[in-house]
Image 1 (tube, rainbow, N blue to C red):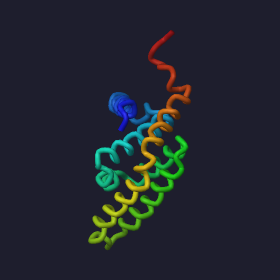
Image 2: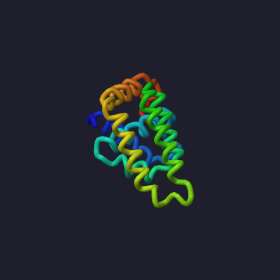
Image 3: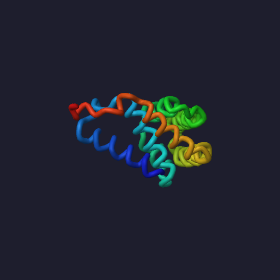
Image 4: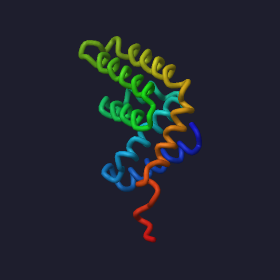
Length: 140
């Protein structure tokens, strides 16, 4: 992941830890979800992310990808969510590990080719947000 995207993710995680969930704006949540997703792909942790992340957060990730104008990646997340939902059906535990592995492989494949473009779109999105251009803690 680009160093700039990593810095964005680190700064947002720090703000979240310091100030709590309500401190992040919707724009910041989009930036955090997408940057963590990109990081998981780059570091080979996508399968773990899909296993550990609640479905609602994955849907929020898809919303973040839509917000930064990455509809193909968003569609891939929605497809992964549908597969994970099916894998989580009671009585399906024996197949769940294979399903999650297959889903993470397909998702990484679908997104990997456009990862650099998604990073650029994420940064472009961040720079278009007026709320991120000023720090309310700093008075003029």
